[in-house]
Image 1 (cartoon, rainbow, N blue to C red):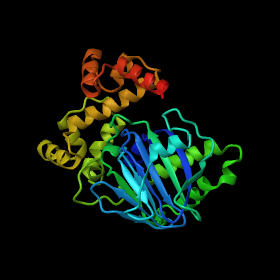
Image 2: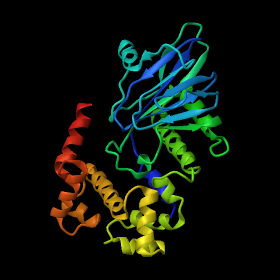
Image 3: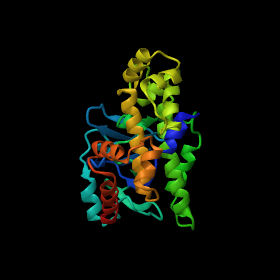
Image 4: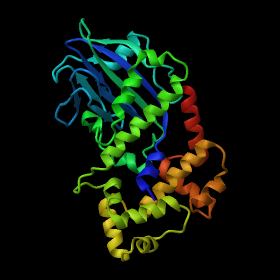
Length: 325
């Protein structure tokens, strides 16, 4: 089983938006903190610029480099680390630009965006995403840092990324029929490629889902949970899947993943349950059974403990949120 591939497929983008900026000699942008479901991809096309994230040293992007900002983290970017920055929200309101929401449909990249004094001879492409997992259920997302950098668009791994960025930034292409569908798939591909590139080079001293996946035996246990979440798993049975003793398995799983095997199992079951609830095609009883609960009451209790609301109220709150946005 390609466990990383399966979990990457579980990352769903509700909405995305792209913008092409014309850049002058001195410019800066201040992006405030957003809900955890928001992410940004910054693509450096033809002139270097800097990205500043709290708690990290300023990072310079060179033409061909890209950076992915996750978890709705606040950040700044500019022609230099000390550039005076324009607030993103104020800029958007002043120019009456479309606001990205979970139900947004953007037919073409936003053009006419300008930063800094003329002449503006350089360009920058930004992509904004609203991810389906706004509640932090996805174990892969939880394990990712706030920023992932791809130097030269990681050309050795993804030689086609620069071509895709060029496509998204091409206003002539954007004016043609069918751009929306193609751009949506391209944006999704760029997002998952960033994450896959990071996952393939996880430091050996790190912890979290990606570090656990790198361990052959723990990966086997994770694969068993992901492929058969409704099975009556126990720490003992998962240890058998991993070919380890119960004690050694429990200790190693917790050390690498950051939570016990049963805690992880419950989290994964609840993620599946939440997704099925939002699909609106399954009864509570059926969902409970599919994720391993013979008692609907027990399922409701665990779900409420995890999300703060019983299943039906959780689904209604998400529907209302999307309607309001």
